[in-house]
Every structure is written in structure tokens, then in C-alpha cells.
Image 1 (cartoon, helix red, strand yellow):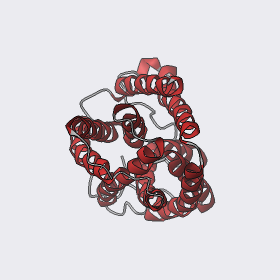
Image 2 (cartoon, chains in turn yellow, purple):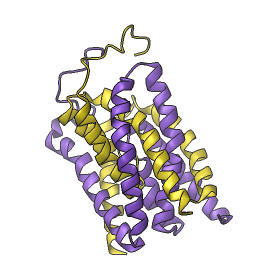
Image 3 (cartoon, rainbow over the protein chains, first blue to last red):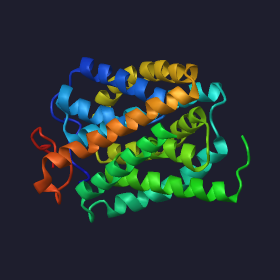
Image 4 (cartoon, helix red, strand yellow):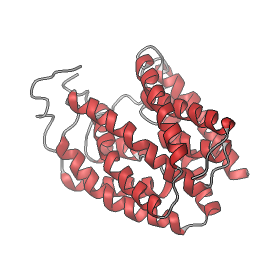
Length: 130
Length: 146
């Protein structure tokens, strides 16, 4: 996987305009809902900019950094951030992401995604009903 | 900022663990899990849950980006174009969120969650035979590097 010579000559220069528009869409979603926006960016890059799944995931993650910083600054300015909770979540997630990445290749992603999607749908219904 | 009690501390650490695990495994699941988790488990205000989620996403995204950059899996030029639009969008989106009533925002979030669940499950349900393969295989030709 690593150390691919000349990988920055990745397939062709991508059109900038669709990327900027996808960015706007993802940024609005991220700021509005407090999420990264990858769930919109990754498929949109595949459909509108012809960028494959893996490259799209990596690109979207890089774009999420400034997007989340801007959103966090706006929410922070309005005192809508709980820093203690954030610190606890960060500590937990840094450990969790290692475990998740480590077992990524040993588990069937499709089954897990289905379980996760079902769980999300349940949470969504719960949030709508309560 | 209030000091949470022990149950809240444990709930938040486990929530972070679960969010990180899913993010590492599936590439999604950070904010999508943390926001409802904070709202439902510790009774956080919808706005605070979203603002806090954004803060947590930052270090996770930075560490992932450094790993992908090291392995040269993306073009910085693409990321800059995406981020340029994204920053403008983030200002619009976050100001809109702050202007909305918490109850309205919560319902919008729940609807987004439901749509995201469908969007994750859809390609798999359509190709049930490939249940043991990786989900969402790119329809575009495989990355020539891999």
C-alpha cells in the first residue's frame, strides 16, 4: 500500500468546479448537523468528479479538517461546545479508531455496514418520536 | 462547561470508543454516532452535541489525513478545491444551525440520519450476493495504483 513512487501524478487533474461545489454542499451539511460530511462528499466525488472510492475517502478526510475547524469556531463563538465532553470523546475515539482500523481487514464490511445502518435507522426513529 | 458525573464520563468515553471504532472500520460514523449519542445518553442540548462533535472530528480527521498523505492516497490540489467550497458552506451551515430551534434541528438531524442509513444499506441490499465482499465497490474502474 505504502510508498508508491510518483503517486501524486494520480489519475488526471480533476476538474476544480465540481469539487468546489461538492465542498459547499458538504460544508453546509457539516455546519448544519455537526458531522464531517464525508457521507455526501465520497459518493458525490465518485459521481460528479469521477474519483474512485479510496481516493475519494482520503480526499474527503483532508477537506473535513478545515470544514470542521470553521464549524467548531462558529459554534464555539456561540458557546455551544462542551470541552470536557469533547476531551472524553477524543480520548475514547483515538483508542477506538486504532481498533477499528486494525480489524478492518478481518471483518466483512458489508455485514457490519448493514448492522450499523439498521442501528442508525432505529436511532433516527427514536429521535423523531421522542 | 459543567463537570460531568461518573456515569456521564463512562458514557462519553464508550461513545467516543464506538465512534472511533466505526470511523476506523467503515470510514463513517464519527459525528453520525456522536451527536445522537450525546443527545440520547447524556441529554445534551442538540446544538451543544453538534458543536462538540465538530471539535472531536478535528483530531480524528487530522490523524487520518496525515496517514493518507504519507501513503499518497489523495491529491492535495483536490482537497484544497473541496475545502475552499467547504469552508464557505460550513459558515452558512453553522450559522443556520445556530439560528434554528433545537427541536427543529433535532428533527432535521434525525431525517438526515435516516437518509444516511438508507444510503449506506442501499448498495448492499442491491447486491446481496456480494455480502461477503467489501461494500460499495467503486463502479468506476479500479484505482490503477491498487
